[in-house]
Image (cartoon, rainbow, N blue to C red; front, side):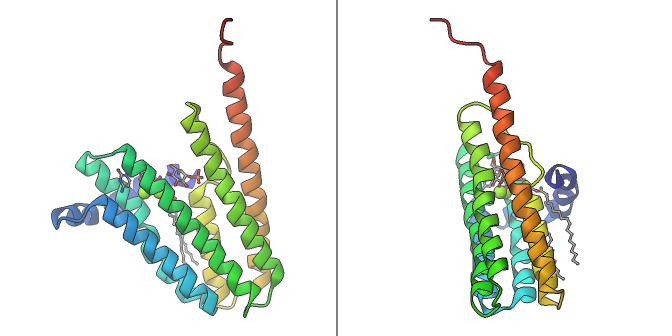
Length: 207
Ligand SMILES: CCCCCCCC/C=C\CCCCCCCC(=O)OC[C@H](COP(=O)(O)OP(=O)(O)OC[C@H]1O[C@@H](n2ccc(N)nc2=O)[C@H](O)[C@@H]1O)OC(=O)CCCCCCC/C=C\CCCCCCCC
Ligand SMILES: O=P([O-])([O-])O[C@@H]1[C@@H](O)[C@H](O)[C@@H](O)[C@H](O)[C@@H]1O
Ligand SMILES: [Mg+2]
Ligand SMILES: [Mg+2]
Protein backbone atom coordinates (compact mmCIF):
# COMPACT_ATOMS: atom_id res chain seq x y z
CA UNK A 1 0.00 0.00 0.00
CA UNK A 2 2.75 2.46 1.05
CA UNK A 3 4.71 1.36 -1.97
CA UNK A 4 1.87 2.26 -4.33
CA UNK A 5 1.11 5.58 -2.63
CA UNK A 6 4.67 6.78 -2.04
CA UNK A 7 6.27 5.55 -5.26
CA UNK A 8 5.43 8.69 -7.26
CA UNK A 9 6.83 10.99 -4.59
CA UNK A 10 10.07 9.03 -4.18
CA UNK A 11 10.51 8.69 -7.92
CA UNK A 12 10.30 12.47 -8.29
CA UNK A 13 12.67 12.96 -5.33
CA UNK A 14 15.36 10.57 -6.57
CA UNK A 15 15.17 11.17 -10.33
CA UNK A 16 17.86 13.90 -10.40
CA UNK A 17 20.26 11.70 -8.41
CA UNK A 18 19.48 8.72 -10.66
CA UNK A 19 20.20 10.83 -13.75
CA UNK A 20 23.51 12.06 -12.31
CA UNK A 21 24.67 8.56 -11.29
CA UNK A 22 23.95 7.24 -14.78
CA UNK A 23 25.82 10.20 -16.25
CA UNK A 24 28.97 9.41 -14.27
CA UNK A 25 28.78 5.77 -15.32
CA UNK A 26 27.27 4.09 -12.25
CA UNK A 27 25.04 1.15 -13.13
CA UNK A 28 21.74 0.14 -11.47
CA UNK A 29 23.37 -3.14 -10.39
CA UNK A 30 26.12 -1.25 -8.58
CA UNK A 31 23.52 0.76 -6.69
CA UNK A 32 21.62 -2.42 -5.80
CA UNK A 33 24.76 -4.14 -4.50
CA UNK A 34 26.22 -1.16 -2.60
CA UNK A 35 22.82 -0.31 -1.11
CA UNK A 36 22.35 -3.82 0.20
CA UNK A 37 25.90 -3.89 1.56
CA UNK A 38 25.25 -0.60 3.37
CA UNK A 39 21.98 -1.76 4.92
CA UNK A 40 23.47 -5.10 5.98
CA UNK A 41 26.60 -3.49 7.42
CA UNK A 42 24.57 -0.92 9.35
CA UNK A 43 22.25 -3.55 10.77
CA UNK A 44 24.95 -6.07 11.65
CA UNK A 45 27.48 -3.59 13.08
CA UNK A 46 25.47 -0.81 14.78
CA UNK A 47 22.48 -2.77 16.10
CA UNK A 48 24.45 -5.57 17.85
CA UNK A 49 26.43 -2.83 19.62
CA UNK A 50 23.18 -1.31 20.90
CA UNK A 51 23.48 1.74 18.60
CA UNK A 52 19.82 1.65 17.61
CA UNK A 53 19.50 5.31 16.65
CA UNK A 54 22.72 5.71 14.67
CA UNK A 55 22.21 2.28 13.14
CA UNK A 56 18.81 3.39 11.89
CA UNK A 57 20.19 6.63 10.48
CA UNK A 58 22.95 4.70 8.70
CA UNK A 59 20.54 2.09 7.32
CA UNK A 60 18.07 4.76 6.18
CA UNK A 61 20.84 6.43 4.18
CA UNK A 62 21.23 3.22 2.17
CA UNK A 63 17.72 1.77 2.09
CA UNK A 64 16.45 4.13 -0.60
CA UNK A 65 19.00 2.64 -3.00
CA UNK A 66 16.20 0.11 -3.61
CA UNK A 67 14.06 2.88 -5.05
CA UNK A 68 17.00 4.47 -6.89
CA UNK A 69 18.11 1.28 -8.70
CA UNK A 70 14.68 0.81 -10.28
CA UNK A 71 14.48 4.45 -11.39
CA UNK A 72 17.94 4.15 -12.99
CA UNK A 73 17.02 0.90 -14.73
CA UNK A 74 13.82 2.41 -16.13
CA UNK A 75 15.68 5.55 -17.30
CA UNK A 76 18.26 3.44 -19.08
CA UNK A 77 15.52 1.28 -20.48
CA UNK A 78 17.41 -1.80 -19.28
CA UNK A 79 14.65 -3.09 -17.00
CA UNK A 80 15.72 -6.68 -17.13
CA UNK A 81 14.79 -10.06 -15.73
CA UNK A 82 18.33 -10.21 -14.36
CA UNK A 83 17.83 -6.87 -12.58
CA UNK A 84 14.51 -8.06 -11.19
CA UNK A 85 16.17 -11.20 -9.83
CA UNK A 86 19.16 -9.33 -8.36
CA UNK A 87 16.99 -6.65 -6.76
CA UNK A 88 14.59 -9.13 -5.11
CA UNK A 89 17.31 -11.50 -3.95
CA UNK A 90 19.42 -8.78 -2.36
CA UNK A 91 16.30 -7.34 -0.71
CA UNK A 92 16.07 -10.61 1.23
CA UNK A 93 19.65 -10.14 2.48
CA UNK A 94 18.88 -6.58 3.59
CA UNK A 95 15.66 -7.65 5.35
CA UNK A 96 17.37 -10.60 7.03
CA UNK A 97 20.24 -8.46 8.29
CA UNK A 98 17.87 -5.80 9.61
CA UNK A 99 15.77 -8.08 11.79
CA UNK A 100 18.76 -10.25 12.73
CA UNK A 101 20.62 -7.17 13.96
CA UNK A 102 17.71 -6.19 16.21
CA UNK A 103 17.42 -9.76 17.46
CA UNK A 104 21.13 -10.13 18.24
CA UNK A 105 21.14 -6.95 20.33
CA UNK A 106 18.10 -7.93 22.39
CA UNK A 107 19.37 -11.49 22.91
CA UNK A 108 22.67 -10.04 24.25
CA UNK A 109 23.28 -6.56 25.71
CA UNK A 110 19.70 -5.39 25.23
CA UNK A 111 18.59 -8.18 27.52
CA UNK A 112 15.03 -8.55 26.24
CA UNK A 113 14.31 -12.06 24.98
CA UNK A 114 10.73 -11.22 24.02
CA UNK A 115 11.84 -8.51 21.57
CA UNK A 116 14.61 -10.76 20.24
CA UNK A 117 12.17 -13.60 19.57
CA UNK A 118 9.58 -11.29 17.97
CA UNK A 119 12.26 -9.81 15.68
CA UNK A 120 13.12 -13.35 14.58
CA UNK A 121 9.43 -14.08 13.98
CA UNK A 122 9.14 -10.95 11.82
CA UNK A 123 12.23 -12.02 9.90
CA UNK A 124 10.83 -15.47 9.13
CA UNK A 125 7.28 -14.32 8.35
CA UNK A 126 8.56 -11.46 6.17
CA UNK A 127 10.56 -13.99 4.14
CA UNK A 128 7.45 -16.16 3.72
CA UNK A 129 5.48 -13.11 2.53
CA UNK A 130 8.08 -12.45 -0.16
CA UNK A 131 8.41 -16.13 -1.05
CA UNK A 132 4.66 -16.49 -1.53
CA UNK A 133 4.67 -13.70 -4.07
CA UNK A 134 7.80 -14.90 -5.87
CA UNK A 135 6.51 -18.49 -6.09
CA UNK A 136 3.09 -17.30 -7.24
CA UNK A 137 4.67 -15.19 -9.97
CA UNK A 138 6.92 -18.05 -11.06
CA UNK A 139 3.76 -20.11 -11.63
CA UNK A 140 2.02 -17.36 -13.59
CA UNK A 141 -0.24 -16.12 -10.78
CA UNK A 142 -0.14 -12.70 -9.11
CA UNK A 143 0.05 -12.10 -5.37
CA UNK A 144 0.64 -8.38 -4.96
CA UNK A 145 -1.78 -8.05 -2.06
CA UNK A 146 -1.34 -7.78 1.68
CA UNK A 147 -1.41 -5.43 4.63
CA UNK A 148 2.32 -5.83 5.40
CA UNK A 149 4.29 -5.54 2.21
CA UNK A 150 7.97 -4.70 2.32
CA UNK A 151 7.63 -0.92 2.62
CA UNK A 152 5.28 -1.28 5.63
CA UNK A 153 7.62 -3.79 7.28
CA UNK A 154 10.65 -1.56 6.80
CA UNK A 155 9.05 1.71 7.82
CA UNK A 156 7.59 0.27 11.02
CA UNK A 157 10.72 -1.49 12.21
CA UNK A 158 13.06 1.37 11.27
CA UNK A 159 11.03 4.19 12.78
CA UNK A 160 10.34 2.40 16.07
CA UNK A 161 13.87 0.95 16.43
CA UNK A 162 15.35 4.39 15.78
CA UNK A 163 13.05 5.97 18.37
CA UNK A 164 13.90 3.21 20.87
CA UNK A 165 17.51 4.29 20.48
CA UNK A 166 16.40 7.80 21.48
CA UNK A 167 14.73 6.55 24.66
CA UNK A 168 11.27 5.32 23.65
CA UNK A 169 10.33 2.55 26.10
CA UNK A 170 11.27 -0.89 24.78
CA UNK A 171 7.71 -2.07 25.26
CA UNK A 172 6.68 0.04 22.24
CA UNK A 173 9.18 -1.83 20.07
CA UNK A 174 7.85 -5.10 21.46
CA UNK A 175 4.27 -4.12 20.63
CA UNK A 176 5.29 -2.99 17.14
CA UNK A 177 7.05 -6.27 16.42
CA UNK A 178 4.11 -8.32 17.74
CA UNK A 179 1.76 -6.35 15.46
CA UNK A 180 4.16 -6.64 12.53
CA UNK A 181 4.46 -10.41 12.99
CA UNK A 182 0.66 -10.69 13.09
CA UNK A 183 0.28 -8.44 10.02
CA UNK A 184 2.89 -10.49 8.15
CA UNK A 185 1.00 -13.68 8.95
CA UNK A 186 -2.22 -12.07 7.71
CA UNK A 187 -0.39 -11.08 4.52
CA UNK A 188 0.73 -14.67 3.96
CA UNK A 189 -2.88 -15.81 4.32
CA UNK A 190 -4.09 -13.03 1.98
CA UNK A 191 -1.58 -14.13 -0.68
CA UNK A 192 -2.41 -17.82 -0.31
CA UNK A 193 -6.12 -17.06 -0.67
CA UNK A 194 -5.49 -14.82 -3.66
CA UNK A 195 -3.53 -17.56 -5.45
CA UNK A 196 -6.14 -20.16 -4.43
CA UNK A 197 -8.87 -18.03 -6.05
CA UNK A 198 -6.86 -17.70 -9.25
CA UNK A 199 -6.10 -21.43 -9.29
CA UNK A 200 -9.78 -22.30 -8.83
CA UNK A 201 -10.74 -19.95 -11.65
CA UNK A 202 -8.41 -21.72 -14.07
CA UNK A 203 -10.12 -23.90 -16.62
CA UNK A 204 -9.69 -27.57 -15.74
CA UNK A 205 -7.52 -29.30 -18.30
CA UNK A 206 -9.55 -31.61 -20.52
CA UNK A 207 -8.54 -35.22 -20.28
C1 LIG B 1 10.15 10.10 13.90
C2 LIG B 1 10.69 9.54 12.68
C3 LIG B 1 9.78 9.84 11.61
C4 LIG B 1 10.31 9.30 10.36
C5 LIG B 1 9.23 9.37 9.41
C6 LIG B 1 9.61 8.69 8.18
C7 LIG B 1 8.36 8.49 7.47
C8 LIG B 1 8.65 7.75 6.23
C9 LIG B 1 7.35 7.59 5.64
C10 LIG B 1 7.16 6.96 4.60
C11 LIG B 1 8.22 6.32 3.86
C12 LIG B 1 7.55 5.54 2.84
C13 LIG B 1 8.55 4.79 2.10
C14 LIG B 1 7.88 4.06 1.02
C15 LIG B 1 8.78 4.01 -0.13
C16 LIG B 1 8.05 3.40 -1.21
C17 LIG B 1 8.51 3.94 -2.50
C18 LIG B 1 8.84 2.92 -3.42
O1 LIG B 1 9.01 3.18 -4.59
O2 LIG B 1 8.97 1.69 -2.93
C19 LIG B 1 9.46 0.72 -3.79
C20 LIG B 1 10.74 0.25 -3.22
C21 LIG B 1 11.53 -0.44 -4.26
O3 LIG B 1 10.90 -1.66 -4.63
P1 LIG B 1 11.48 -2.50 -5.81
O4 LIG B 1 12.93 -2.71 -5.59
O5 LIG B 1 10.63 -3.69 -6.00
O6 LIG B 1 11.19 -1.56 -7.07
P2 LIG B 1 12.15 -0.81 -8.08
O7 LIG B 1 11.56 0.52 -8.35
O8 LIG B 1 13.57 -0.86 -7.68
O9 LIG B 1 11.94 -1.66 -9.40
C22 LIG B 1 12.42 -2.97 -9.51
C23 LIG B 1 12.67 -3.25 -10.98
O10 LIG B 1 13.71 -2.43 -11.46
C24 LIG B 1 14.56 -3.16 -12.34
N1 LIG B 1 15.93 -3.22 -11.81
C25 LIG B 1 16.18 -3.01 -10.50
C26 LIG B 1 17.48 -3.10 -10.04
C27 LIG B 1 18.50 -3.40 -10.93
N2 LIG B 1 19.80 -3.49 -10.52
N3 LIG B 1 18.24 -3.58 -12.23
C28 LIG B 1 16.94 -3.50 -12.69
O11 LIG B 1 16.73 -3.71 -13.92
C29 LIG B 1 13.95 -4.55 -12.47
O12 LIG B 1 13.08 -4.57 -13.55
C30 LIG B 1 13.15 -4.67 -11.19
O13 LIG B 1 12.08 -5.55 -11.33
O14 LIG B 1 10.36 -0.63 -2.17
C31 LIG B 1 10.76 -0.60 -0.97
O15 LIG B 1 10.27 -1.43 -0.34
C32 LIG B 1 11.75 0.34 -0.44
C33 LIG B 1 11.13 0.82 0.79
C34 LIG B 1 12.02 1.70 1.49
C35 LIG B 1 11.28 2.11 2.71
C36 LIG B 1 12.21 2.78 3.61
C37 LIG B 1 11.47 3.41 4.64
C38 LIG B 1 12.34 4.15 5.54
C39 LIG B 1 11.45 5.02 6.29
C40 LIG B 1 11.72 5.61 7.36
C41 LIG B 1 12.93 5.46 8.10
C42 LIG B 1 12.99 6.60 8.98
C43 LIG B 1 13.88 6.33 10.06
C44 LIG B 1 14.00 7.54 10.87
C45 LIG B 1 14.34 7.12 12.20
C46 LIG B 1 14.42 8.29 13.04
C47 LIG B 1 14.37 7.86 14.41
C48 LIG B 1 14.20 9.01 15.25
O1 LIG C 1 6.52 -9.28 -1.38
P1 LIG C 1 7.03 -8.20 -0.52
O2 LIG C 1 8.22 -8.62 0.27
O3 LIG C 1 6.02 -7.51 0.28
O4 LIG C 1 7.54 -7.04 -1.55
C1 LIG C 1 8.38 -7.40 -2.61
C2 LIG C 1 9.78 -7.02 -2.33
O5 LIG C 1 10.19 -7.48 -1.11
C3 LIG C 1 10.66 -7.58 -3.42
O6 LIG C 1 12.01 -7.45 -3.13
C4 LIG C 1 10.33 -6.89 -4.70
O7 LIG C 1 11.16 -7.31 -5.73
C5 LIG C 1 8.87 -7.16 -5.03
O8 LIG C 1 8.50 -6.48 -6.18
C6 LIG C 1 7.95 -6.79 -3.89
O9 LIG C 1 7.81 -5.41 -3.76
MG1 LIG D 1 14.74 -1.70 -6.26
MG1 LIG E 1 13.72 -4.11 -4.19
